[in-house]
Image (tube, rainbow, N blue to C red; front, side):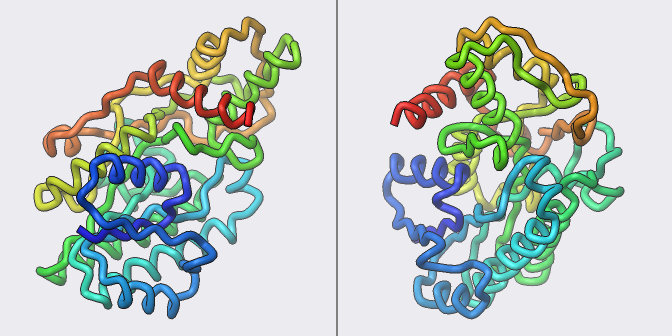
Length: 308
């Protein structure tokens, strides 16, 4: 197939791209920002008509952790909304038969009980710290559902991954999510001989983090089993850990033996967020990496970047 990947230079996109390149047999179209501005509606439409892909994998987006989402809510809403609408509608207008939309588990209501089933989307108020990003992702997800429902020759489907980490992640704490931020903080403490590392909140909030190589494998499964894929499907572990657990595991893998201190004045987001993997299991896919296996590969990648 001819496959267009948006966001092919981001963490998720790069992992998907690597998996597809290793598998072979497909022509990949992977425009960067300088080649295609996804916020430019006319440019996206022209690009889609020019290349006529058989499948679009939409990974592009403005992403970041709690700090970034709280500091830039307008940008997280508008940029992701524009990118999602432009890509999906341009694909639809160009007659692209299949589209795989990568969404986020932040679309689920803040007060919903875990595990979070797909039918809970729009069933309650969102987590305030990343509401703008979540709204944009919900719009893209619903748009794909509407197109699939009303056009028999379109299969526009959405994966809702749990939190991700892995190779090609962002490790700067100003822009990173929890796991890469922990890796960076613990490594800095180790090399600088610092005895403590700070944790926001009391560390008891629970999160589900999956290695990004596994979501790339889920995309490979989707390419081979697209007809059987649900229109919206969670991709996750069906298991979670506390924030304190993640800090402790990173410290153990890195060999840092200091102590952790908690800043109870900082925001922590939802108390628990774990996706329901019933549809994923019925579809016939499951992740391969344990937390420690995924962390080892991610830390190796981080240390390669640090040494470079």
